[in-house]
Amino acid sequence: MSDESLPVEDYLAKGGVLSAPANVPPRYRGELMRLMASFVDSELAGSAGFAGVLNEAPGIAARIAAARIVAEKAEHAARVLEIMGEFGADTARYAARHPWDARLPREADIGARRHGGDMRLSVFHYPLRGWTDAVAMNALMGLATVVQLSELSRVSYAPLAEVFRAIAPREAAHAEAGLKGLARIVAAGGTAEAQAALDYWRPRVASSFGRERSERFERLARMGLRHAPNETLLAEWTRLAAGRLAPLGLH
Image (cartoon, rainbow, N blue to C red; front, top):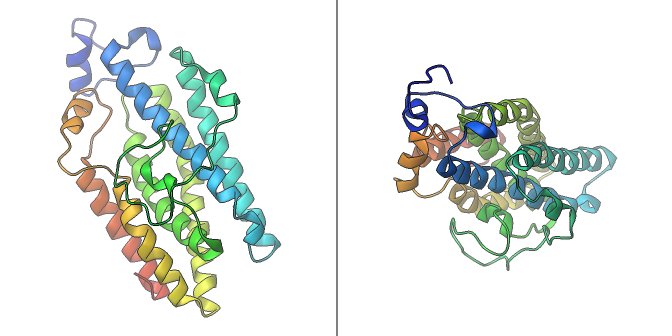
């Protein structure tokens, strides 16, 4: 802390950052652990879901790219999990078997609600249906992750912000792989199928940004764990996705 005379809460509200578990007050710790658990569980669930469609990839190059995404998402989860362990989290439970590949029925509609026994974002409770569907989901959620990491990279716990900044380029590469995959699908005459997949995933990815005018946002903002409200991040993703899909003849 740069000003030891300030209470921690006031220090954070003024833009201060923390660098070690010993400096962290209990309420801040709880919110930080929730944030990290959501990211870790989402990465593991996303990795497991994409692993299920590897054998549907059209060719060796596509399979290699998909396998890289599966592996890197698991690695990103491990890096954040290491920080959770420094706060006393039971990281050993992540070594046990957990149904990260479990999904709800395709027609389910849970909005932004959590479901089941982990903290994954709601979008990772929906099943992938074939290669085009997986590519569309990866493109949309990849762009959402780019936007969300731009926010997470500014969290007031410095070691975590550093990890998020380090993994952001690889997550951006995942989004680019999805967009390139969509371009190949469109070039092969699959525009209608790609658009149908995008139509399915768009509202589900949008839900991952959370509720508009969230009361929790103000509390997290005072702790330096949030900076831009959900609706601002959602608008940025909508703009970004529209701009990247339009040249492909998609929306």
